[in-house]
Each structure stands twice: as C-alpha cells, then as structure tokens.
Amino acid sequence: MHPADPSAIPSYRAAPARTRSLVRVALDWLAMTGALLYWGILGLLVTIICGTLSFILPRKAGERFGRQVHHYIFRYFVVYLDATGLLKVDLSALEKLGRISTPIIVAPNHASLWDAVFIIARLPQAICVMKNAILRNPFLGGGSRLSGYIPNGATPRMIRDAAEALRRGGQLLLFPEGTRTRPCERWINPLKGGCALIALRARVPVYPVFIRSNTRFLQKGWPLWRPPAFPIEIDISVGEPLLPEKAESASGFTTRLQRVYDQELAKSHPLRRQTGV
Image (tube, rainbow, N blue to C red; front, side, top):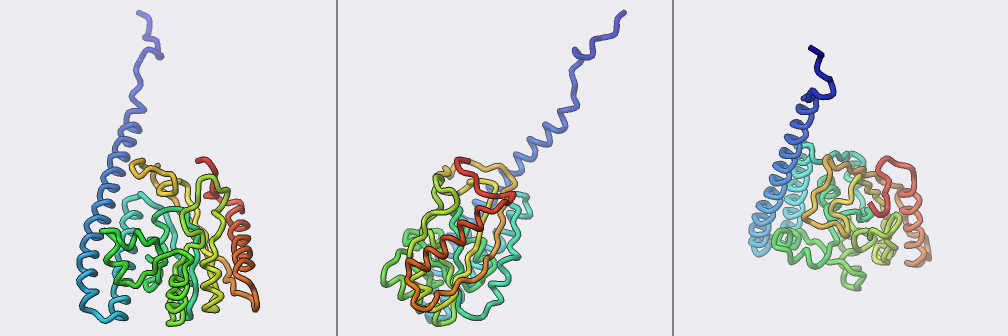
C-alpha cells in the first residue's frame, strides 16, 4: 500500500491563525460599537447638562466647567481606544504646552475629524475655534457653547473674540487650514489668514502641532461607514513657537507658518502622509 500523497492531506495548521483573525475582527467591531455608544450617550448627556447649566452658572465658571468636562470625556475616550487596541497614540509631546502659563495659539494641521479630541485630552482649558455647525450639533453643541468655544471663519467677530480670550490668559486651539486637509494636497491645505490675524492682534506665539497617521480614517473624503484597519496609529509632535515679527503682515506670517508645516510634514517618517491612500 502506497503512502498517501502529502499534498492531498488537508492541513489544519492555518485554522488557529484564521480563528484568531476572526476573533480579532469581532473584538474590534465590539470595541468600535462601544466607542460609538460612549460618544453618543455621553455627548447627549453633556449637551443636556451643560445646556441647563448655561442658564445657572456665571459665564466664567461655566466656561471652566465646560472645558474640564470636555477634557475628561476626551481623555478617557483616548484611554478606552488604547485599552481596546483600536488606537496607538502618544500624547506626551503635548504636555509641554500644558505647562505654559502664558497665552499661546496651539495650531495643528487638520488631518481628521477627531484631531481636537487628542489636543483637548491633554490641554484641559483649551479654547477651541470650531465650525459653527458643531456648536449646533446635538452631541457636541451644549458643552461647546458652555465652554465658550468660538465659531470659526476669518470674520472680525471671530478675530476679536479669539484675541480677547488670549488676553484673558487662555490657550487657543485653532486649525490654520480652516478645514480638514484635502486628499489632493501633498502635505497640508493652503493656510487661511485667521491664525495670523489673531496672533498679530494678540501678540502671542503660535505653536505648530504636527499630526500624522497610518490611515485616512475620518479624513476628508473618508465615508463614515467605512471601517479602518486596526490599530490606528497616530503621531503628534510640537514644533518651535513662531512669534509675529514687528511690522510683519498677516500674509507674511501665514507664508512663514505654511513653510514650517510643509518642511516638517515632508520629512521622512513611518507615518508620513501618502497621497491617494
């Protein structure tokens, strides 16, 4: 009797790996569902509670409370994502910004929808400049309004409100692009003039923050229903501060700031942006 042809004998060695892969996918989906529930339930609760408190608390106390609430919600959201293996991110580079006691503008490139989450998770009293539509959002609007967050757009009112917040000693979180980076851009969108106008008016330094990721998840053009590959990897670093020079124009400062982003984001890095991905 001839021995059986080894090639005809089915191999089961791949089965455990395949099973582990299916289990990992199931766990990722379960963790993602938990993240959505965390965001949705807490978002609605914060809107209801903060919306009520806005009629009770004095303005200054309300703003501090609202910002602290956002800080803890975002902080533990990041902890959850890290614990479940959905996200790998190191926010330690932002700690030096938290130790600065003077007014500054924190200016990240706007890679994706959740960039502000990572910044506020480390900067408890950051004053965020955000889209007006978010201030009307049922999950984020109530808390954002109580926190004194500022609607974006290079309007005289926005410039005035932001400069006034800085004069009171705040840390302003502002995305100089004004919107998320477009997929067609190599590194970053052309910067808007709002950041320069505020820096010139308030005479404060701008700290560029560089955000890189291994995925286009939640970036412009990414469908909300499309899941990413896990774990998501995000790198955040902080550049040297830029202070408006004497008699420098807003366009000149914007050009100088644009050059800083282009040069830094073009550097070799494991998570360097790839166009068309």
